[in-house]
Length: 197
Length: 119
Length: 141
Image (cartoon, rainbow over all chains, first blue to last red):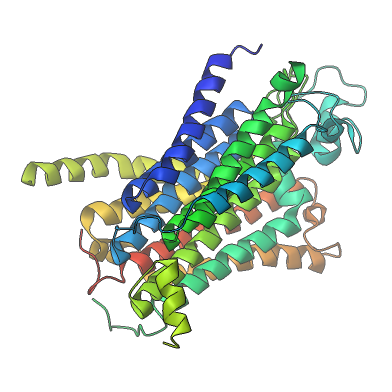
């Protein structure tokens, strides 16, 4: 058992409880705040899973920007929602069937944390050294004992910006396009210089 | 029993995913649908990150004296996905604002009725 | 009510410089620890949004002009793509940072992450302006 098992269980229980409460919540403002809390708990769980970059981004983006945008939206449209008008049985059936199929699918997966899982072993072990050109010399210095600190220790940023740099260019373009789309929808190009205070 | 301890992380993530899915299909208010999709999205991210974890490993930041690192690649993919997710959420929310101004309502059944009447 | 406003103003004045400084730290130390362009862009935008929430949207508009933001968003994407074109001009593939010499990877990653941070900051702030400025005549503080 890992030494953070109590914290693990606590965070997981809180995650599930928050998600279930959001289902039942009728007031939209409370649902938005609970979504922010859910994102933040998700970020804590990602930190427990040894992914600090992702946890950072999820906390800043999910619990920060997403909540701000949703609050901005409900300040424009009001916070009341109607009583759920449909019978819940058909959605429950669909959700249960999909969940059962997914659980059946996970029975073939390698166990959590398994070092022999295919993701750790293929394409080759030593992925860190392969993807990170500085480490090839740092960790196997030709004729030098004792490794000097590698030039770029953060593997995730190195892979994101160099090995998968093209994907990151596409992602930046997506962000920019979304910004353009939101500006077109909400300011509509009606704004002229000197028009608004 | 060993299957249970080995796989229950994935099962909890599946429960979260199905909760988000349920909110997206069973609620009529458009903002609640967007919230359900966000919950679904975050749980998918959790599943990918769970797949990369190695028992006894540490964060993938190189340091002398550390032997085992958690696999960095799921983190890279999910970083991109998180940012793209917030971009689509922002566009969805902007569309909701315009729908409210156009139709006067945000409930899905009233919107469908208004469209059917040829409004 | 006055005490509440003073409390908010004092707290914001204490926090906002450190938030912005932390955003810059995360941007340029992304290769040594967790961080990078996306996180830094969002943190910087969050600091500016806090300023807008406490001191009013008009004050934020004076501090950070929306027109400049729209241009900066495009400049961020162009910096990223321009780095790729620069590597091509030096004879190697698109976004192959070895074209920049011995420490090419490091320089390439720094410049590219800066472009990403710029684009993300500008877009997040523009979206905030779009949502907050849409109410009747614009929201107040």
